Length: 612
Image (cartoon, rainbow, N blue to C red):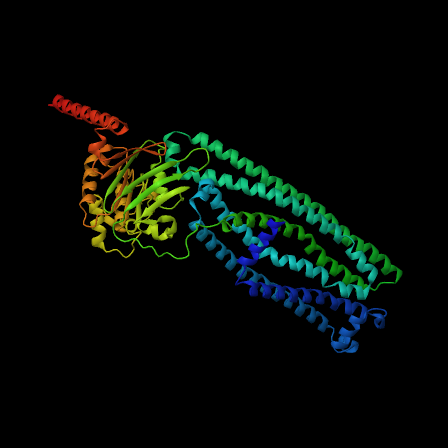
């Protein structure tokens, strides 16, 4: 129950700004309904009050209409007047029906557009822990299919619920004034129809939730395959992935088919109930007509009125179906919109500028209670220095970066930037001063200039050339036919791995960060180019504080501090000279890599000599 209240509260919240338009649509609906019921009153008036055998015994409404339209003699001579009036009333009903549809469409489209904007804005501000558990394909499905379900409900069915109720309630006073017994007979099957529709709504709501989640899983499979299409082909896994998608698609098909079977059952039973209701009116009305207790005009009006309200009531099941779907969709959207965002202090009085110092003070962090990703990590980086992180996979290197960027906050201990606790700082201000270059950088499907200028759109051409030169990618870009205007594919796929890393490094440097993080960001670059880049970074005029994560010790050896991590703990700490003399992980790795390099150089010399 609380969930339903929350869902309806969401509808009320997102329709803010469009409620007046919805009210206009409802008023237009009321007007259209009135004119639709007025139209069959005219034939009833003519049949009973003008051409009937006992015109003086016509209903009071018929007699009032006859007097209002000029009297019986006038209408008898001007018999085109009732026909024209029917046309006018029907036309007015059509006009207001059009206005109802137009205003509903305007309001619903504006509302759904706002929901889409709110969803994307929300997704941009949710904590990283939310994405740790979410599937990208499922999130895409919520932002597309679920939003479209909400749009259909707001556009077609919110007002239709009111229409069904109005079409049922509006004629009751008229029907009662004409014949109480036939009025009751005309309504006898409405309660069973409503009860059946409600039962159907409860079933659809449950089944649609299963089908919607299955569609989300199917979308996730598609998204994963499109994102990793080269991996799929490289490992010749097309058949496996095809079967995986087929299974997900088959599950969605079977659940969706169950929905359509349920819908087919509803249409069959509801048609039977509606036709039975009309049959009751025909049988009883015909009997009373032959008995002389019912006039032809009243019988005609009852048939017209029952036909007008019974089919909208039958459509109530379809409306409730969409309500069930919308309830599920809104619930899935509310899981995103209602999720708490990253929290920040009310005011950020801390400002980072230029080089910054960094200190980890006995930091402990774990993703779960079983094992700590960081266990009492402490180190200090002075402004302008470079610290290198070395360790096997899972040793805690990336966790240090994630905590520094405030993707997560430590369980205990402190992280200080320029002596300020990062947990007291606004995340945006921290991230604006930190630039990260990943091993697999993300580039947009735009030209190289737009990719480098991403963080600073106002950057000048000379600034872009400077950072591209520092990243040793300027000459590479200039060798392309279109230079910096060269379009690259999605995720920069038309570039080599080393080129992507250098473009990403240039993009990071253009932001003039206070702290630069290279997370294995030069792994695809050859050693000579790597040496040039690192020298350029060290000798730069505005040298920033730097964190380097790498597995090649040649990348790390010139750092001011080298941190060796193992299972979330600091195993060793010092300079290259001191660590290479100490027994431990670093010295062992240094000897192994030195021996490999020496062997490689020897083989290279021998190969060259043999060719001579």
